[in-house]
Amino acid sequence: MIFGTRPEAIKMAPVYEVLKQKGTFDVKVLVTAQHREMLDTVLDIFSIKPDYDLSLMRGRQTLAYITKEALTGVVEVLEREKPDMVLVHGDTTTTLAGSLAAYYLKIALGHVEAGLRTGDMYNPFPEELNRRVADILSELCFAPTKRAAQNLLDEGIEETRIFITGNTVVDALLRISSIEFEFRGELERLSSWDGRIILVTFHRRESWGEPLVEICSALNLIHDSFKDILIVIPLHLNPEVRETAFSVLKGDRYLFTDPLSYVPFVHLMKRSYIVLTDSGGIQEEAPSLGVPVLVIREKTERPEALEAGVVKLVGRSRERIVREVSLLLENKEAYDRMRKAVNPYGDGRASERIATILEAYL
Ligand code: UD1
Ligand code: UDP
Image 1 (spheres, helix red, strand yellow):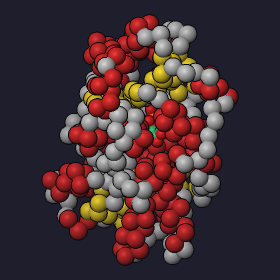
Image 2 (cartoon, rainbow, N blue to C red):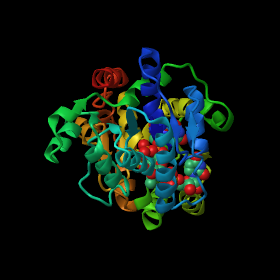
Image 3 (cartoon, protein in one colour):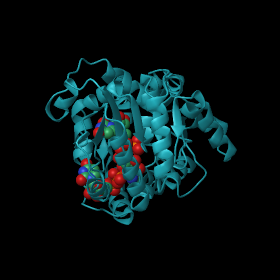
C-alpha cells in the first residue's frame, strides 16, 4: 500500500491492521512522505513501520515536484517488489503518482475512498483530478457510500469494479475516540476552560491568499463579538497557510497549536461546540461525534452529512461565515437541529470489508 500525507495514513492504518491480522497477505507499506512530521505521528500511533520511505517532502514543494519524485520513486519500488496489487487512498498527489506508477507497470490497482466528486476540476484543487485518475485506473474501487458508487457508475465505470464498503476513517475514529484522554501540554488551557470552543482548521490550496484572509478576518470578528468562546486552531505546517493566519488573526482567546497528533485532535473535536473547517476527513469524523460542522469551502464532495443536517457549507466570505457562526452561537434551536450524531460514512467495519474483497480478488 502507498500513502504520503496525514489523512491518507489515518484512513489506511485500519486497512493495514486488518490485512496484517488476516495473515494471508504479504503487506508492504511504501510512504512517499509527501508530509513528514504530520505523517510520522500517525505512523507512531498505529505502530506502522514503512518498508519504503521516499522522504520526498521539501519546504514549499510544488505539485510538479511531488508528482515527479513520487512517480519515479514508486516505480522503482514496484519494479523491485513486483506486487500483485497496489492500494492507494483518496485524492492527494501521492494517490495520483501511485496510481500512475501501478498503471505503467500493469499492476492491479485498488482505490480506497473511490468515487468522491464535486464535478469541478478546481474545487478542490488538485484533488478532483487525482481521484478521477485513480478511479479510471483501478480494478477495485472501494466506494465509501452509495452516492460515491453512483458517481462511478455515472462515469461509466463497470459495476463489477465497484464495492460499497463505508469509509475507513470511521474505523480509525471509533478506535481512537474510546481511548481515555486528558488535555495537557499545549492544550493545557482547555482543562480549565469552561466556555465554548470553536475548533478551526484550514489548508486547502484553492483558499490560499485572499479567501484565507477573508476566513481569518471573519474569525477576528467572531472572536471580538463572543467573549465566552475560545478559538482553537491547530495550524497546518504549510508555510502559505501559517503566514496568512499569523498576520491576520489577533486576539487573546485564540489558542494556536502545531498540528495535533490524532489522539488529542479527536478528543478536541469531541470537546468542541462547533467545528469550522475546509478539511475532508473532519467533515466525515465530526458527524459521528455529534458536533456541528461549518465547511469553509465553495463545494464539497461529501454531500451525505450535508443532507443529514449536521454539516453546512458556508463558503469563504467574511460576512457569511460571521452570520452562520453567530447563528449557531446565539440560537440554541438552530444549534440543536445540527447537533445530532449520525454516521453516513460507515459503521467501523470498512477495512474488514475491503480485506474480504481483496482476499476474493487475489
Ligand atoms: C496535502 C494534499 C491535500 C490534503 C492535505 C492534507 C496534495 C496536492 N495536497 O496538502 O490533498 O488534503 O495534504 O493535509 O496532495 N509541511 C511540513 N510538514 C508536514 C506536512 C507539510 O512542513 O508534515 C509543509 C511543507 O512546507 C510542504 C507544505 O507543507 O511543502 C505543503 O505540503 P503538501 O503535501 O504539498 O500540501 P498540503 O497543503 O499539505
Ligand atoms: N487531524 C489531526 N490533527 C490535526 C488536524 C487534523 O490528526 O491537527 C486529522 C483529522 O482528524 C482528520 C485528518 O487529520 O482525520 C484530516 O487531515 P487534513 O484536514 O489535513 O486533510 P483532508 O482530510 O482535508 O485531506
